[in-house]
Picture: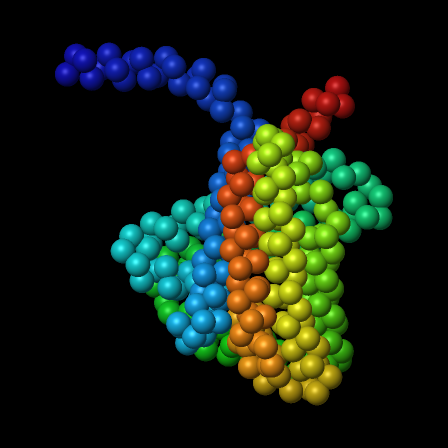
Length: 296
């Protein structure tokens, strides 16, 4: 009992020093790294399921929520989904720092503001996915591929029922298509190695993963935008598809299975690049506290 009391007193004495070392910037950095890792695992899972669908080893491709539903059926799946949820919340927080406080020092040019806007949208998307993970973990609902399709078509139907809903749906499709094109352009134009703190040989290799991954993510997004725009043009909610449903429709086209397999390999590459970013990305969290200190 005396040893236990001694250990407790030692921990109490050391706690202030430990908390001092674990300042807000350090916590945010490690939360961000966990976020990159969580995003990488999600895309590895998506790429694996899309590849299985291309090889006809599983009935359909699945989106992120369908993937989480699959993981929930695994042993210890609840723990995995909880960890993914917290990781994605960390990634959403990092995106907020990038967008609001310019953590990557992009500046205020038109191009920089466009990048930061994209980071803000990304943060909202991954934050919503994190809350979906927590909801799924608590309720263990089955979000299958069919449910994702019904949700997408129901959302399109509600939008079409509003004034100028067809135009809004067309705009949503155009924006989604633009996001896909933007990802493809990033794959060709972005210097993925400049924010990685790794050796030259490793950086050369992982940059290839980044280029392939961003290009594939863009290609995977284009069909969703096209179907949304078609639903607005034809004023038919049934033409809208979820991300996974759009890829499944792509598979039915000539050479569609080859296209789907190429996209799957690219998504796997994007997932691996996310794990590399978790380990090697230079992350310098900027918070209001840091900004006020800098101004002083």
